[in-house]
Image: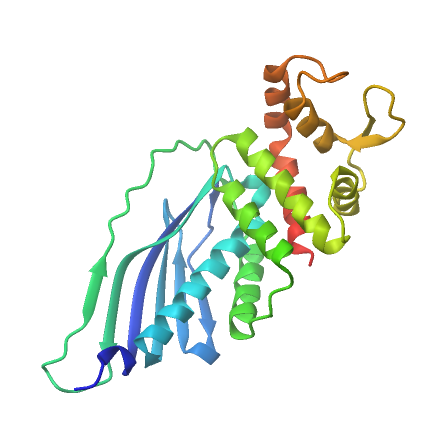
Length: 269
């Protein structure tokens, strides 16, 4: 008997993931015809995503399903960063593969992973507009159906850091990871990193972002976000003051708009 994992069949997987701070307005259906993939995203806490891949071998179906789930998760993070308090990446709750055979000696392989969600209290989560969720869904369908070659190691790592940053519940940690992601994005987009180039990217997506004089003898300016970063990192430095607590509070006050601006930089390839 041949290896069942090489036989064509139907894979069904149930994934869950968390986007704290937002709420889906309704179930959302997705379809990637090229892969024989159908999915439905259900609102709730956590969100649930049922994925079905039909007509290919088990290993191929699993690879396509995982690629699709990760692309959807990343797409939602990029689109709705400003409202997300924290996130948790997808995990598989249930998995079943049925080979396309008629003999009764073959049965489905089913696995289950009971992944307990951390307690997290959200006050009045933002209800996401159905049309904007639909835009993400259609974009994910296109990206999965026609994968693009990797743009660059810097940009790929920047996107990974962006995702990791939103998975942090500590807002200062999240801010610092996202700022570092911008530095990598600048190395790809502008061929050079550093805070001047980070500021250039930020002003490109948010021209109204405040630019403030740098301390000490410098005549240059820095954006509000770079000032917040430097005030925290160099809290004991010349001209930066000595109040890390105040720096933390200032970062927390700006984190939502910062997340929005970073998402615009990262998603604008």
